[in-house]
Image (tube, rainbow, N blue to C red):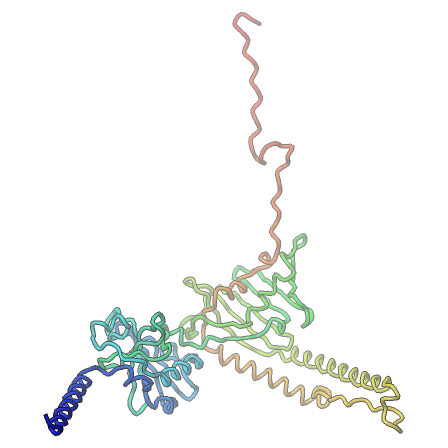
Length: 433
């Protein structure tokens, strides 16, 4: 065999190998290396602000929630336009925008159920169809199971496509409308409150209070004579109700009105802020409506007292500075100085311009009242049980239980027990007197 023939055979073999490789690769499904690091939804991050609505649809084609973007932000259609949880919503959209494909999975519809990406028309569908509107090309994506046990990632499938994808991160979707609601109501610290008054539906009243803002514990008013509090801090939980208060669910107030008998609570702060609360129980849930107002007289008194305190503290600081300068050793004083100058003390606004200080503080309080009423207005909230237990209170709940009277040991029997019968006289023998 000459060299020319040998080269021709080698070339033919190479061509055959290349042809076989091309045929096999064209028939094979797209593999991980081809898809890896590709964006699940290319360009979405740059278009997030274009989204006008998000519809979440679950099993049996039932809409879980419709989130709409309007002039006042994001709201929930199924909750009469109540505000959506913006941080949660933003986090979810950013996860979608940043999701990248880890690998392709099955395109066999019989296996979709195992991954949670079956069509949501099915009554047993486990995934959620996420529809994004407002984009040039609407997005429809079925978000399935989180692959926590398999190294992370979430199974997804674009609606209308057969291919299932495993994408990076946990894209799990909240499957209840309540889960998309804004839940924060108030965060008013207990040390800000002067008094809490609770009027129970049965007419009983509980009042707890502090005499000074710095008091460690709330006191209980009208403790019955001869009774004691169960502890010095028993009433503190009552005063902490508005601290970190969150709702579990919400309804339009017109659709969930209070009954005739309710708990009526007033939370009065030292600075004049007042929060009123009406609460009741229905079908095992704890409901409440809230309002906020400002006691102008209490606010003025509080500001005046704070300004007086600020003036006294400023004058004390000035005097302390003078004394420190006078007591400074002569060796530390610059040559030729008869006396060292005291350090200058900055004047707080309450001292330098009391009127401006008062106006700014009143404005801040009025702004707070307006913000609270914007949150509260027109809504009935479902409260967590552990918060409602601080509303369902009476004076009796604050007290040590009454001691049970022990039976008198001399009686030898329980009170009320029948006395033992007297012994009967012996019957005389026959023939005897």
